[in-house]
Length: 401
Image (cartoon, rainbow, N blue to C red):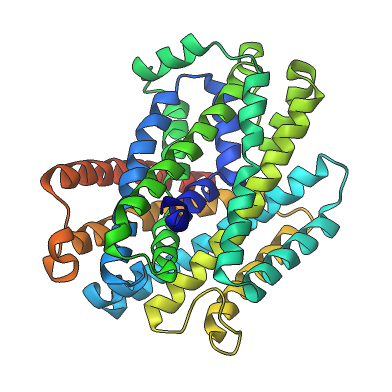
C-alpha cells in the first residue's frame, strides 16, 4: 500500500535539493567544513513537521493549502501571500534553469541550446502527461541525485568526524557563519513545498485511512533528501575545505573536485546538479500553478486538457517561458536573482507557517485531526526558529541586492 501512496513527500523533499540548494551546501562545505552539519539535522526535523501538517490537511479536507488559506483568512491576505509566492517561485525557477545550464556547460554544451530544449521537455511532460505518468517521471528524476551519494564516498570521508559534528554542534556568532546557517534553513524549508505536497495528496485522492503511509512517505523523502544534502557538504568539506579552496557556485565545486577526487567525481557532481535542477524546474512551476488556481477558484490539476484548466497551464507556461528568457539574457546576474528569491522567501515563509498552524489547529476544519500538544510544541518551536532565520535571511538579502 505504501508504494501506491508514495510520491508527494518524496518528490517535494528531493525537489528542494535544486540548484540553489546544491550551491548552498557546496559553499557551506568548502567554507565551514562540517561545522554546520548540526543545522542540517535540525532542519530535517523542521521539514518533516512542515510537510506532515500539509499532507494531513490535504488528506482530511481534500483541499489544497491556498484554498484553505482563502477560506480561513479571506481574499486580501490570500492575494498578498500569492503575489509574493508568484514572484519568489518564478525567481526560483530562473535559478533552477540556470543550474541546468551550468551543469551541462560542464559537458561542453551551450545554454542557448540546452535551456530551451529542457524547458520544452518539461512543458510537454506536464501539459500532455497524465498525473501518474508525470509522477513516475518525477520519481525517476529523484534517482539521479544518488550521484551525490557516490561522489560523497569518493571524497573518502572520516565517518567518525561526521558523527561527532552531529552530536557536538559547533556554534559561532561570526556573521558569515550565521548567514550560512540561515541559508541552510532557508534552502531546506521553502514556501512552495506545502502547496505542492498538499495539492499532490489531493490529486492522488489519498484518504484518511491511508494517511499513515503518506506520513511515512513524507518522513522517508525528507530524510533521504537531507542525507543527500549531507553528502554534498561532506564532498566539499573533505576535499576543498582542508586546502582553503572556497567556491561560490555548484559548478565551481564540480570543477574543483577533479584534481582532488578524480574526474569521475566532477562528472557525478555535474550529473547530480543536472537531475536536481531539472526536477526542481519541473516541480516549482507546477506548485505555482496549483497555488494560484486554488487561491482564486480556478480549475487545476495535472492530466486535464488545456481547455479544461486554461489558467493552470497558463501560469505554468508563463513561469517556464519567463525563466528561460531571463536565463538567456547575456550577462544577467543570477546571484542577484538568487538573493532576491531569498528575500521574498524570507517575507513569505513565516506568514505561510502561521497560516498553516492556525488552520491545522482549527477543529472546524480538521475535526479530530488537529495537532496534539507535543506536535504543537514542535511545530511552534519550528515556526519560531524559521521566523528568526527568515528575518536574518531577509536582512542579509536586502543588503546583498
